[in-house]
Length: 120
Image 1 (cartoon, rainbow, N blue to C red):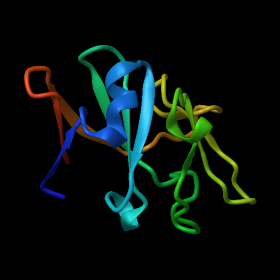
Image 2: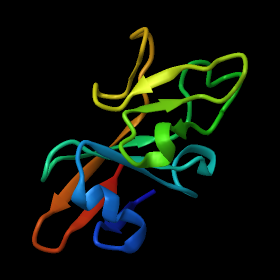
Image 3: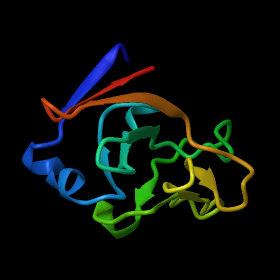
């Protein structure tokens, strides 16, 4: 993945633009296409995480689900019945037990263009 640009004024991402902290998921990118989770922490600070559970990645590569479908989401949860790990998106995407963390990508925000650029 060389880079992805996300226009935060685009209709699908306006909840990120207006509210923070908040999270939104972009499908089709990241590990095995499970998606990316874009988290707005402050007016100008964004973080981006892979939407793949890292708890037991050798045995399952489950796509995470955002709490509340994204709007106001503070947790991402693994829907795998044998896992159910929750990741705190407000706390650097560590699991609740602190034993694993989501893969983070570099997210750079330009407030003039309202574009978030995501790179490895």
